[in-house]
Amino acid sequence: MVDPHWFSRFQPPDEGGRESAVLMLFGPPPADEGSGGEHVILIERSHTMRTQPAQIAFPGGSRDPEDEDSIATALREAEEETGLDPDGVDVVDVLPSLYLPPANFVVAPVLGWWSRPTPLTVRDAAEVHEVLSVPISHLVHPETRFTVTHPSGFVGPGFELDHLTLWGFTAGLLSRVLDLAGLTVDWDESRRRPLPEIYLRERR
Image 1 (cartoon, rainbow, N blue to C red):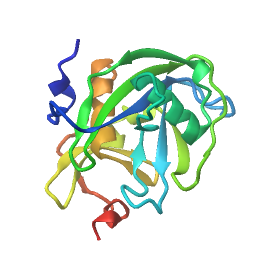
Image 2: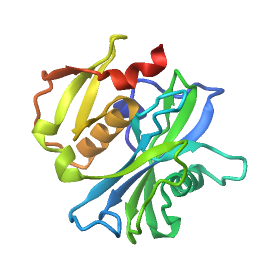
Image 3: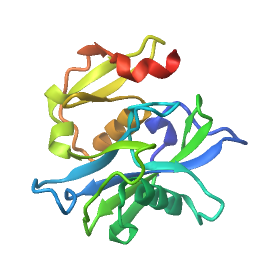
Image 4: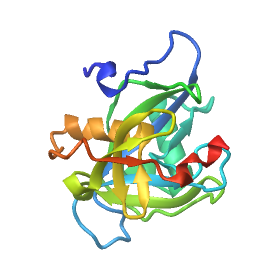
């Protein structure tokens, strides 16, 4: 069992917190894409959302009363957001739950392998702007990685996804999972970039 503190210094409170889950889905690209290799599925949140607009994230969300467990939550949310067929996902593990203090979310990362890829699409434009299938080879390339600096003083891992920036909770969790899998390639952690303005809009 991996120590939860290895993933994040923010641990769930003894009581309270909104239960939620995200799906960290690795495997081949969607069925309608021609590229090969192993990918991970991400979403770009709608640019009109009140919180975290345009952020890059794993599919996921709050647990519904009818969800049996965190796995059910992650698969349901992924289906609602991307059109994913849950039957094609082999659940590998549920990682230790982590805490997001600003939103009071207790997040269970569900690690999955996409055994039977299907096409993906935006199901609700009010929540998702784009569904992204990102090659692992891109994520581990040293030139893709940098350290993000936030006006609040936050400093953390970042990934360049063409014109997009992956940062924050999602980038930190993904970085740790790549480390855990032994896939990380040495990169220059001293290379710093300020967070682009598009990800700061909810502060206004």
